[in-house]
Image (tube, rainbow, N blue to C red; front, side):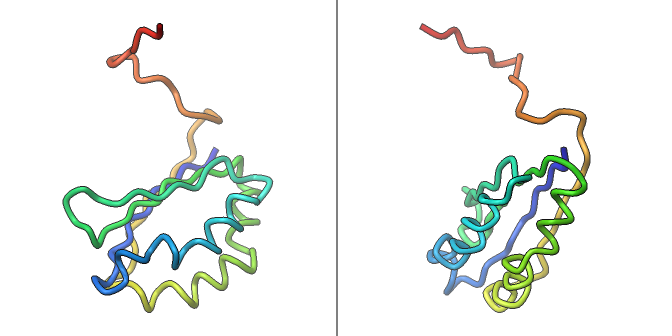
Length: 109
C-alpha cells in the first residue's frame, strides 16, 4: 500500500473550521475504491496544525486519487487557508492494514 502522512499548518482564523473546509474533499476521497483510509487529526500542541493520515491500495489507486476532480479542486481551494506548504511523508509498505503494537498489547475481556 501507499502510506501518506501530511502536516497542514492552517491559518489561525480557519483552524476551528478546517474539518468543514476539507469535508467535501475528505468524503470524496474516502469514497474512492482504492482508498484504504483518509483520517484527520488535530495537533495537541499546535491548534493550527492538522495531520492527515491516508493510505491507498497501490500505485493505480494513488494515481486515480491525484488525477481526480476532487483532488484538483482541493489544489485550488485549500492553499488559501494555509500558512505554509504542507509537509508530506509518502512511502510504500508491504501490508494492507494497520498492525498491532505488540509493546502495548491489551488483554480483551
